[in-house]
Image 1 (tube, helix red, strand yellow):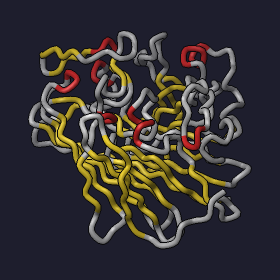
Image 2: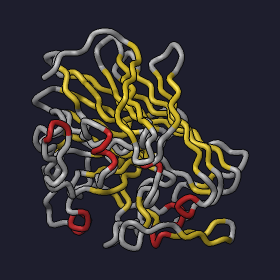
Image 3: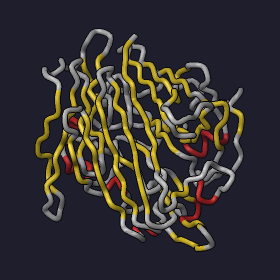
Length: 357
Protein backbone atom coordinates (compact mmCIF):
# COMPACT_ATOMS: atom_id res chain seq x y z
CA UNK A 1 0.00 0.00 0.00
CA UNK A 2 1.25 3.44 -0.90
CA UNK A 3 0.23 6.90 0.20
CA UNK A 4 -0.60 9.51 -2.42
CA UNK A 5 2.17 11.87 -3.45
CA UNK A 6 1.24 15.50 -2.73
CA UNK A 7 0.33 18.12 -5.30
CA UNK A 8 -1.83 18.11 -8.41
CA UNK A 9 -0.35 18.69 -11.86
CA UNK A 10 1.63 17.14 -14.70
CA UNK A 11 5.25 16.06 -14.37
CA UNK A 12 7.45 14.27 -16.85
CA UNK A 13 10.71 12.39 -16.67
CA UNK A 14 12.93 10.25 -18.92
CA UNK A 15 11.63 6.70 -19.36
CA UNK A 16 14.25 5.17 -21.64
CA UNK A 17 15.42 5.11 -25.25
CA UNK A 18 14.44 3.22 -28.38
CA UNK A 19 16.98 1.16 -30.29
CA UNK A 20 17.33 3.98 -32.83
CA UNK A 21 18.36 6.36 -30.04
CA UNK A 22 15.14 8.34 -29.73
CA UNK A 23 14.40 9.24 -26.12
CA UNK A 24 11.04 8.41 -24.54
CA UNK A 25 9.40 10.28 -21.69
CA UNK A 26 6.87 9.35 -19.03
CA UNK A 27 4.11 11.80 -18.07
CA UNK A 28 2.32 11.64 -14.72
CA UNK A 29 -1.08 13.32 -14.36
CA UNK A 30 -2.25 13.72 -10.74
CA UNK A 31 -5.40 15.35 -9.35
CA UNK A 32 -5.96 16.95 -5.94
CA UNK A 33 -7.18 13.62 -4.50
CA UNK A 34 -3.89 11.89 -5.25
CA UNK A 35 -5.43 9.83 -8.06
CA UNK A 36 -2.92 9.62 -10.88
CA UNK A 37 -2.25 8.08 -14.27
CA UNK A 38 1.14 7.70 -15.95
CA UNK A 39 1.38 7.61 -19.73
CA UNK A 40 4.29 7.19 -22.11
CA UNK A 41 4.17 8.34 -25.74
CA UNK A 42 5.61 4.96 -26.73
CA UNK A 43 2.47 3.16 -27.83
CA UNK A 44 0.35 5.79 -26.09
CA UNK A 45 0.69 3.43 -23.15
CA UNK A 46 -0.93 3.79 -19.74
CA UNK A 47 1.85 2.47 -17.51
CA UNK A 48 0.14 2.95 -14.13
CA UNK A 49 -3.07 4.10 -12.47
CA UNK A 50 -2.86 4.85 -8.76
CA UNK A 51 -6.34 4.50 -7.27
CA UNK A 52 -7.45 4.69 -3.61
CA UNK A 53 -9.06 1.90 -1.63
CA UNK A 54 -11.75 2.31 1.04
CA UNK A 55 -9.07 2.93 3.70
CA UNK A 56 -7.40 5.68 1.67
CA UNK A 57 -4.41 3.61 0.56
CA UNK A 58 -3.27 3.84 -3.05
CA UNK A 59 -2.29 0.95 -5.31
CA UNK A 60 -1.32 0.69 -8.95
CA UNK A 61 -4.20 -1.19 -10.58
CA UNK A 62 -2.81 -1.88 -14.08
CA UNK A 63 -0.22 -4.40 -15.23
CA UNK A 64 2.96 -3.20 -16.89
CA UNK A 65 6.67 -2.63 -16.42
CA UNK A 66 8.96 -0.37 -14.40
CA UNK A 67 10.82 0.96 -17.43
CA UNK A 68 10.61 1.24 -21.19
CA UNK A 69 12.66 -1.90 -21.87
CA UNK A 70 9.82 -4.12 -20.68
CA UNK A 71 7.42 -2.58 -23.18
CA UNK A 72 9.91 -3.03 -26.04
CA UNK A 73 10.06 -6.80 -25.60
CA UNK A 74 7.41 -9.43 -26.34
CA UNK A 75 4.32 -8.59 -24.27
CA UNK A 76 0.53 -8.56 -24.75
CA UNK A 77 -0.04 -4.85 -25.44
CA UNK A 78 -0.10 -3.80 -21.76
CA UNK A 79 -1.87 -0.43 -21.52
CA UNK A 80 -1.33 0.53 -25.16
CA UNK A 81 -3.38 2.31 -27.80
CA UNK A 82 -4.48 -0.31 -30.31
CA UNK A 83 -4.88 0.62 -33.98
CA UNK A 84 -5.40 1.03 -36.81
CA UNK A 85 -7.96 -1.70 -36.06
CA UNK A 86 -8.44 -3.12 -32.58
CA UNK A 87 -9.18 -6.83 -32.29
CA UNK A 88 -9.23 -9.23 -35.26
CA UNK A 89 -9.80 -8.97 -38.99
CA UNK A 90 -10.58 -12.40 -40.39
CA UNK A 91 -8.17 -13.72 -43.00
CA UNK A 92 -6.14 -10.52 -42.75
CA UNK A 93 -8.02 -8.95 -45.64
CA UNK A 94 -11.05 -6.84 -46.56
CA UNK A 95 -12.67 -5.25 -49.59
CA UNK A 96 -13.45 -1.52 -49.55
CA UNK A 97 -15.12 0.31 -52.44
CA UNK A 98 -14.34 -2.61 -54.74
CA UNK A 99 -10.63 -2.79 -53.87
CA UNK A 100 -9.03 -5.67 -52.00
CA UNK A 101 -6.60 -4.93 -49.17
CA UNK A 102 -4.28 -7.46 -47.55
CA UNK A 103 -3.11 -6.93 -43.96
CA UNK A 104 -0.25 -8.46 -42.03
CA UNK A 105 -1.40 -11.67 -40.31
CA UNK A 106 0.02 -11.96 -36.80
CA UNK A 107 -2.60 -14.26 -35.22
CA UNK A 108 -2.57 -17.40 -37.32
CA UNK A 109 -4.44 -16.50 -40.50
CA UNK A 110 -5.93 -13.38 -38.90
CA UNK A 111 -4.84 -9.79 -38.37
CA UNK A 112 -4.83 -8.78 -34.69
CA UNK A 113 -4.55 -5.37 -32.99
CA UNK A 114 -3.12 -3.50 -35.96
CA UNK A 115 -0.61 -6.14 -37.05
CA UNK A 116 3.11 -6.51 -36.62
CA UNK A 117 3.78 -2.80 -36.05
CA UNK A 118 0.54 -1.29 -34.86
CA UNK A 119 -0.09 1.94 -33.01
CA UNK A 120 1.13 0.24 -29.82
CA UNK A 121 4.69 0.25 -31.23
CA UNK A 122 4.72 3.85 -32.47
CA UNK A 123 6.37 6.75 -30.68
CA UNK A 124 3.62 9.35 -30.52
CA UNK A 125 4.26 13.09 -30.33
CA UNK A 126 3.31 14.36 -26.86
CA UNK A 127 1.66 17.69 -26.12
CA UNK A 128 0.71 18.38 -22.47
CA UNK A 129 -2.48 20.40 -22.14
CA UNK A 130 -2.05 24.00 -20.98
CA UNK A 131 -3.84 24.63 -17.71
CA UNK A 132 -5.46 21.18 -17.55
CA UNK A 133 -4.54 17.65 -16.51
CA UNK A 134 -4.41 16.52 -20.13
CA UNK A 135 -1.90 14.89 -22.40
CA UNK A 136 -2.54 14.82 -26.15
CA UNK A 137 -0.64 12.32 -28.29
CA UNK A 138 -0.38 12.62 -32.07
CA UNK A 139 0.59 10.03 -34.65
CA UNK A 140 0.44 9.96 -38.45
CA UNK A 141 -0.10 6.48 -39.88
CA UNK A 142 1.21 6.44 -43.44
CA UNK A 143 -0.79 5.25 -46.43
CA UNK A 144 -0.26 1.48 -46.71
CA UNK A 145 0.96 0.98 -43.14
CA UNK A 146 0.28 -2.66 -42.20
CA UNK A 147 -1.78 -2.83 -45.42
CA UNK A 148 -4.37 -0.15 -44.58
CA UNK A 149 -5.24 2.50 -47.16
CA UNK A 150 -5.00 6.21 -46.46
CA UNK A 151 -2.81 8.58 -44.50
CA UNK A 152 -4.46 8.62 -41.07
CA UNK A 153 -3.88 11.48 -38.66
CA UNK A 154 -4.67 10.25 -35.15
CA UNK A 155 -4.83 12.00 -31.80
CA UNK A 156 -5.48 10.50 -28.38
CA UNK A 157 -6.09 12.77 -25.40
CA UNK A 158 -5.76 11.46 -21.85
CA UNK A 159 -7.35 13.56 -19.11
CA UNK A 160 -7.42 13.02 -15.35
CA UNK A 161 -10.59 14.51 -13.85
CA UNK A 162 -11.35 15.76 -10.30
CA UNK A 163 -13.70 12.82 -9.63
CA UNK A 164 -10.95 10.22 -10.21
CA UNK A 165 -11.70 9.58 -13.86
CA UNK A 166 -9.27 8.79 -16.63
CA UNK A 167 -10.93 9.99 -19.82
CA UNK A 168 -9.61 8.98 -23.25
CA UNK A 169 -10.73 10.88 -26.36
CA UNK A 170 -9.79 9.52 -29.80
CA UNK A 171 -9.90 11.52 -33.04
CA UNK A 172 -8.83 10.59 -36.58
CA UNK A 173 -9.02 11.95 -40.14
CA UNK A 174 -7.95 10.32 -43.40
CA UNK A 175 -7.19 11.24 -47.00
CA UNK A 176 -8.55 7.94 -48.41
CA UNK A 177 -11.40 5.63 -47.37
CA UNK A 178 -10.14 3.29 -44.65
CA UNK A 179 -11.19 1.36 -41.55
CA UNK A 180 -10.55 2.69 -38.03
CA UNK A 181 -11.23 1.07 -34.66
CA UNK A 182 -9.13 2.27 -31.70
CA UNK A 183 -9.06 1.13 -28.09
CA UNK A 184 -6.90 1.00 -24.98
CA UNK A 185 -5.58 -2.38 -23.85
CA UNK A 186 -5.04 -1.89 -20.11
CA UNK A 187 -5.01 -4.97 -17.90
CA UNK A 188 -6.75 -4.23 -14.59
CA UNK A 189 -6.48 -5.82 -11.17
CA UNK A 190 -8.34 -3.66 -8.64
CA UNK A 191 -6.61 -5.40 -5.71
CA UNK A 192 -3.32 -4.10 -7.13
CA UNK A 193 -1.20 -5.17 -10.08
CA UNK A 194 0.31 -8.59 -9.43
CA UNK A 195 -1.82 -9.26 -6.33
CA UNK A 196 -3.36 -12.60 -7.27
CA UNK A 197 -6.06 -13.42 -9.79
CA UNK A 198 -9.24 -11.50 -10.59
CA UNK A 199 -11.67 -14.41 -10.26
CA UNK A 200 -13.32 -12.79 -7.20
CA UNK A 201 -13.80 -9.43 -8.91
CA UNK A 202 -17.51 -8.75 -9.35
CA UNK A 203 -18.34 -7.75 -12.92
CA UNK A 204 -21.37 -6.19 -14.57
CA UNK A 205 -21.61 -5.70 -18.35
CA UNK A 206 -24.52 -3.70 -19.74
CA UNK A 207 -25.21 -6.05 -22.64
CA UNK A 208 -28.10 -8.29 -23.66
CA UNK A 209 -26.10 -9.93 -26.47
CA UNK A 210 -22.58 -10.91 -27.47
CA UNK A 211 -20.88 -11.93 -30.71
CA UNK A 212 -20.00 -15.65 -30.62
CA UNK A 213 -16.82 -16.65 -32.42
CA UNK A 214 -15.49 -19.53 -34.48
CA UNK A 215 -12.46 -21.63 -33.61
CA UNK A 216 -10.12 -18.84 -34.71
CA UNK A 217 -11.91 -16.22 -32.56
CA UNK A 218 -13.60 -14.52 -35.53
CA UNK A 219 -17.27 -13.56 -34.98
CA UNK A 220 -19.73 -15.78 -36.80
CA UNK A 221 -22.05 -12.83 -37.49
CA UNK A 222 -24.65 -13.95 -34.94
CA UNK A 223 -25.73 -11.63 -32.13
CA UNK A 224 -26.55 -14.14 -29.40
CA UNK A 225 -28.56 -13.49 -26.24
CA UNK A 226 -26.49 -13.76 -23.06
CA UNK A 227 -29.46 -14.93 -20.96
CA UNK A 228 -28.71 -18.20 -19.17
CA UNK A 229 -25.18 -18.43 -20.57
CA UNK A 230 -21.81 -17.88 -18.86
CA UNK A 231 -21.74 -14.58 -20.80
CA UNK A 232 -24.60 -13.17 -18.73
CA UNK A 233 -23.14 -10.33 -16.65
CA UNK A 234 -26.27 -8.18 -16.66
CA UNK A 235 -26.28 -8.58 -12.89
CA UNK A 236 -23.06 -8.38 -10.91
CA UNK A 237 -21.29 -11.70 -10.39
CA UNK A 238 -17.79 -13.03 -9.86
CA UNK A 239 -15.57 -13.34 -12.91
CA UNK A 240 -14.66 -16.88 -11.86
CA UNK A 241 -18.19 -18.11 -11.17
CA UNK A 242 -18.62 -19.79 -14.57
CA UNK A 243 -15.30 -19.20 -16.30
CA UNK A 244 -14.50 -22.94 -16.43
CA UNK A 245 -17.95 -24.11 -17.54
CA UNK A 246 -17.94 -26.69 -20.33
CA UNK A 247 -19.18 -24.08 -22.76
CA UNK A 248 -17.98 -24.07 -26.36
CA UNK A 249 -17.39 -20.31 -26.42
CA UNK A 250 -15.35 -20.38 -23.21
CA UNK A 251 -13.34 -23.34 -24.44
CA UNK A 252 -12.39 -21.49 -27.64
CA UNK A 253 -10.79 -18.65 -25.67
CA UNK A 254 -9.74 -20.71 -22.61
CA UNK A 255 -12.03 -18.35 -20.71
CA UNK A 256 -13.57 -15.02 -21.57
CA UNK A 257 -12.32 -13.28 -24.71
CA UNK A 258 -15.52 -12.00 -26.30
CA UNK A 259 -17.16 -8.87 -27.64
CA UNK A 260 -20.35 -7.78 -25.89
CA UNK A 261 -23.03 -5.78 -27.71
CA UNK A 262 -23.69 -2.81 -25.47
CA UNK A 263 -27.30 -1.96 -24.74
CA UNK A 264 -26.80 1.79 -24.61
CA UNK A 265 -25.05 3.96 -27.13
CA UNK A 266 -25.04 7.69 -27.81
CA UNK A 267 -22.87 10.70 -28.40
CA UNK A 268 -22.07 10.96 -24.70
CA UNK A 269 -20.32 8.12 -22.85
CA UNK A 270 -22.74 5.76 -21.12
CA UNK A 271 -22.13 2.93 -18.68
CA UNK A 272 -20.75 -0.20 -20.33
CA UNK A 273 -19.27 -2.16 -17.42
CA UNK A 274 -18.65 -2.03 -13.68
CA UNK A 275 -16.05 -3.92 -11.64
CA UNK A 276 -15.95 -4.23 -7.83
CA UNK A 277 -13.08 -5.73 -5.85
CA UNK A 278 -14.44 -6.77 -2.42
CA UNK A 279 -11.24 -6.70 -0.35
CA UNK A 280 -10.09 -3.19 -1.26
CA UNK A 281 -13.54 -1.80 -1.96
CA UNK A 282 -12.33 -0.36 -5.27
CA UNK A 283 -14.89 0.18 -8.00
CA UNK A 284 -14.15 0.85 -11.66
CA UNK A 285 -16.89 1.95 -14.04
CA UNK A 286 -16.29 1.96 -17.79
CA UNK A 287 -18.28 4.44 -19.86
CA UNK A 288 -18.03 4.71 -23.63
CA UNK A 289 -19.53 5.93 -26.88
CA UNK A 290 -18.58 2.65 -28.57
CA UNK A 291 -21.11 -0.09 -29.50
CA UNK A 292 -19.07 -2.97 -28.06
CA UNK A 293 -16.68 -3.99 -25.31
CA UNK A 294 -14.23 -6.91 -25.32
CA UNK A 295 -14.00 -8.71 -22.00
CA UNK A 296 -10.74 -10.64 -21.79
CA UNK A 297 -9.81 -12.56 -18.64
CA UNK A 298 -6.05 -12.74 -19.35
CA UNK A 299 -6.25 -16.45 -20.07
CA UNK A 300 -2.91 -16.60 -21.85
CA UNK A 301 -0.71 -14.99 -19.24
CA UNK A 302 1.35 -17.85 -17.82
CA UNK A 303 3.90 -16.42 -15.41
CA UNK A 304 6.62 -16.07 -18.03
CA UNK A 305 6.33 -12.28 -18.09
CA UNK A 306 7.89 -10.48 -15.14
CA UNK A 307 6.25 -7.11 -14.58
CA UNK A 308 6.58 -4.27 -12.08
CA UNK A 309 8.82 -5.17 -9.17
CA UNK A 310 9.77 -8.43 -10.89
CA UNK A 311 6.35 -9.97 -10.17
CA UNK A 312 5.35 -12.82 -12.47
CA UNK A 313 2.04 -12.19 -14.18
CA UNK A 314 0.13 -15.44 -13.88
CA UNK A 315 -2.96 -16.69 -15.71
CA UNK A 316 -6.08 -14.61 -15.06
CA UNK A 317 -4.28 -12.11 -12.86
CA UNK A 318 -6.06 -9.24 -14.64
CA UNK A 319 -8.99 -8.41 -16.85
CA UNK A 320 -9.33 -6.20 -19.92
CA UNK A 321 -12.41 -4.21 -20.88
CA UNK A 322 -11.62 -2.93 -24.36
CA UNK A 323 -14.23 -0.55 -25.77
CA UNK A 324 -14.57 -0.99 -29.50
CA UNK A 325 -16.52 -1.58 -32.67
CA UNK A 326 -17.06 -5.27 -33.28
CA UNK A 327 -14.22 -7.58 -34.38
CA UNK A 328 -14.02 -8.27 -38.12
CA UNK A 329 -16.38 -5.40 -38.90
CA UNK A 330 -14.61 -4.72 -42.23
CA UNK A 331 -15.94 -8.08 -43.44
CA UNK A 332 -19.35 -7.87 -41.74
CA UNK A 333 -21.50 -5.13 -43.32
CA UNK A 334 -24.29 -5.97 -40.87
CA UNK A 335 -22.09 -4.82 -37.96
CA UNK A 336 -21.76 -1.11 -37.08
CA UNK A 337 -19.49 0.41 -39.72
CA UNK A 338 -15.83 1.21 -39.11
CA UNK A 339 -15.34 2.99 -42.44
CA UNK A 340 -13.83 6.47 -42.29
CA UNK A 341 -13.85 8.62 -45.44
CA UNK A 342 -12.09 11.87 -46.36
CA UNK A 343 -13.91 14.83 -44.87
CA UNK A 344 -15.30 12.73 -42.01
CA UNK A 345 -14.03 12.60 -38.42
CA UNK A 346 -13.59 9.52 -36.27
CA UNK A 347 -14.43 10.37 -32.66
CA UNK A 348 -14.63 8.01 -29.72
CA UNK A 349 -14.56 8.47 -25.94
CA UNK A 350 -13.98 6.05 -23.10
CA UNK A 351 -13.92 6.88 -19.39
CA UNK A 352 -12.51 4.76 -16.55
CA UNK A 353 -14.09 6.08 -13.33
CA UNK A 354 -12.71 4.94 -9.96
CA UNK A 355 -14.43 5.04 -6.57
CA UNK A 356 -14.80 2.93 -3.41
CA UNK A 357 -17.59 1.34 -1.42
